[in-house]
Amino acid sequence: MKIIAVANQKGGVGKTTTAVNLAAALAESGERVLLIDLDPQGNATSSFGLQEIEGQSVYDPLLGETPITEKILPTRLAGLFLGPADIDLAGVEIEIARMPDHLTRLAQALQALRDDQTFDYVLLDCPPSLGILMTNALAAADQILIPIQCEYFALEGLVKIVRLIERIRDSGSNPRLELGGIVMTMFDSRTKISAQVVAEVREHFFDGVYETVIPRSVRLSEAPSFARSILEHDPAGIGAKAYRALAREFRQRQQGGANPDIPGAVEQSETEPRDPARQREK
Ligand SMILES: Nc1ncnc2c1ncn2[C@@H]1O[C@H](COP(=O)(O)OP(=O)(O)OP(=O)(O)O)[C@@H](O)[C@H]1O
Ligand SMILES: [Mg+2]
Image (cartoon, helix red, strand yellow):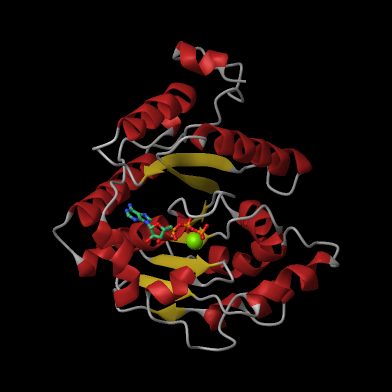
């Protein structure tokens, strides 16, 4: 089982859209997937129409009061399960902040799932902040998947996350955290800026960037209001095609073993010559 944090401290970059539709596409291809909504806004939860259930979130498991397995709901898609968010989750940061192990509460709560191997992948939809919930997600995850919008300032935000990953590793709370990849979202082929941003991010992060780029599509943005993933909402459209392609590439990267690491933090022992763009990045 692998735990993937879908995270970016910047708001509105496509974290939830990517977490929901990648999870759906992975389940469609036969993987057993659990999506955990770690955002008190509950957007991933309402994307499945499961927002009305009170007391059904990782709030209690984070406090260590209930096993996480009791908070998992099935979705309409075979193989896809949801750990929903509710409004209680907004208070959890304050509750656990005073606990001595407050950064590893989620890792501890998820240990039962690692032990029983019910799922192939657990995706964590993170809130847009560098708060305790996101830090817990990074401390629990094997990899971080970073959606970024094809817009100016994309790189500036990335630099902050890369620093955070390094901090989490160095702090000892999760030395094995890897950069699972950067996914460029809301690509608009009619504008020059989209292509420029993709080129710029690739120049800095090389193969850390997914080949698959998610296009801007109205169908993707309206799917949650029908409580459907894009695979059900517009199965043959560009959004569904893109997220199926992302899922394929995701699986290939997982099977490929060595994941792309953070450029600039690459082991010195590597003998393969690297893209010069990598050498510049520090
Ligand atoms: N590829 C896309 N094409 C068009 N609209 C999109 C696309 N991806 C996301 N959106 C829309 O952009 C908005 C932000 O997306 P989303 O909620 O996925 O981002 P987020 O990073 O999870 O936001 P937050 O930081 O608030 O959690 C939403 O209205 C969503 O429907
Ligand atoms: Mg979100």
